[in-house]
Length: 263
Length: 76
Image: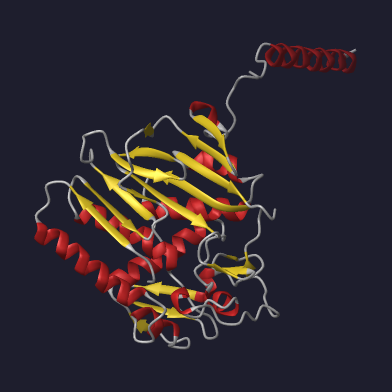
């Protein structure tokens, strides 16, 4: 998935930590769009056909549909064609490709692109799904449960902490310039400061199909779970500086709103 | 005679209902301190700090600490 992962646990047998690491590698291989052999790529390439999917893939796809609802359409996994048009066609370590933004337009509603039923899913012809942050948040939540009662899982910045942490006061997690003690909470950052190139970046505004420019370029959030934090952070960034404070106040436990220098 | 009584009765009923409504409304003034919809704009319960380039708000259910973080949301 082109990102890093950190697993922390107190009083956990090493074999369980290793099993969790193996699970991360297995899921990442299934959910990445950067491999043509991944489960996600096969689903995207099926051109409107129903495809048998694993339990985990089904769960993440359903999570993507729920994220679309929770964000009123701002978190839209049907973003793959727009990301490819912006030049994000391969891991950024290999460099972006030429952006082709001339034909950009609003993304189609996710429920019209993605359909899921028990054990199978379908992606409309000519569209594509990227599970990016949704998958990271979902995996962090799953891992935090998998690792036991006192653990923290960080999937590329989407994390969830359970239990009292190593000192008994919680898990110290950095959120911009402050450190917060998390217990049974998740956190995530949505940012256009990273994964950016030339005039583009990876965070697509579904209303335009273009890299987002809202006046905020970074939002970090603490919420109930990593999945929720991911949705809230991305939605707040897309809402912009006028609406994001009230939105975060209604949904998050703590938040950082970073204003962009180019407005 | 009877139509006149009916008119007087209807008028009295209308005036009575109006007076009763006015009394009810004036005795149930809107509380300007009442909260808006669920917890929107409740950031006042937490601490808000402006730092270079943005704002950090920490609500009451999260504790800031001076400890070194073991990880952060900037891992990617």
